[in-house]
Amino acid sequence: MSGTPDLFAEHDHGPSWPQVRAWIQAHAQTLVEDRTLLEEIGLKPMGPNVVDFGRAALGRLEAAASREADARKQIEAIARANFAAQTQTHVAALDLMEARNQSDLARRLDAAAQARFGLSGAAIALEKPGGIPFGWKALEAGGVDSLVGENGLAWLGPVFEGLDLFGPAGAEVKSVALIRMAPQFAGSPARHALCAFGSPEEDGFTPQMGCELAAFITRVTERVAERWPVLS
Image (cartoon, rainbow, N blue to C red):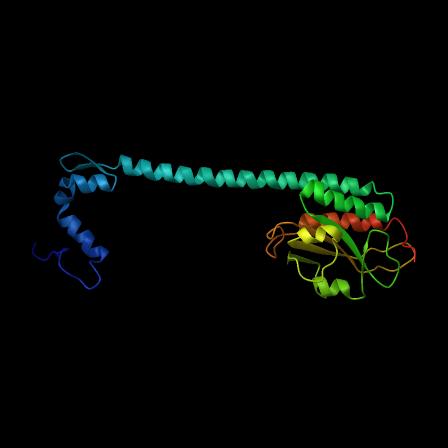
């Protein structure tokens, strides 16, 4: 072993890989003859100086195939969930467009949120001054900015104290999505308003989520609400 490091000698941090590699190169026969070690690392000795790497290679291929299958299943599950959500959103939009008045619109929005999306409920809130349609929630002037931010279009996250928008269902709401809208009713300028969606799950709405579907429902609600004037 002249000039070859002794792997069994004590080192402060153990032998480095170049040292291990050099030792294996210098003592290849020792590795080949150690059948127990080869079996433990998934190799199979086939004869003098021959080692079958098939088992180890097959194991790696099987592991890679398993990871790919799991990833594919996750992607497929997400795709199915997205498709189902989009379908329910389109059906809900059609239902909202059938509203007969602003009160019926609020009722239909709440019903769609519960039946089609499994939410605790949904509500439409409109700022004063001015009339508030029956079934809508009233907010003081500046109320929308205080909820979603002065320049914010939406706010998603845990429910907070003082958000009294869901009536009796409010007790079970754990997270909310608040989407700004600005309906312009006949004969009046645009008014600050929002659609609120309440989930019974703490992670039903989180700041990291996108809100495209909720925003789409809100835009439909906004346009339908503009069909009728708001009586003072």
